[in-house]
Image (cartoon, rainbow, N blue to C red; front, side, top):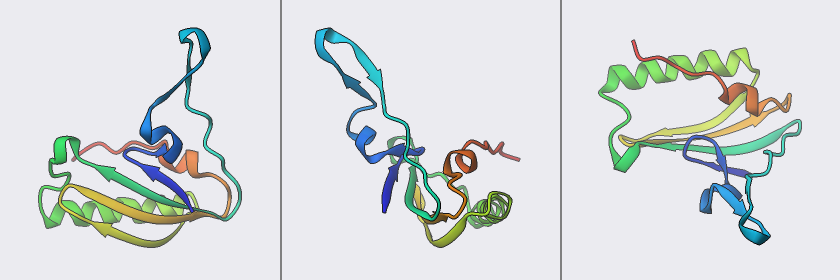
Length: 109
């Protein structure tokens, strides 16, 4: 299982967003490895442990948008957990398109 944390960063990048090289050079995190039928644990937390959902209606809207996204990008959702200040998703990408499915942004209504 590929582990993703807070906004889609890889587990390797979670400890530090950049990799330091010799002589003070800094390199961006490596590209995320994608392949057909990959399974990812995705998490997203609110800043400073703040709530990310206002109420049950907000949670329902999130689940509607999640359902639309998994249908658009042909992603399999194996499980999810919605907490007040974060969520967890266990997703599988039959088409190796995880990057595309995470690129969409949602505007609050």
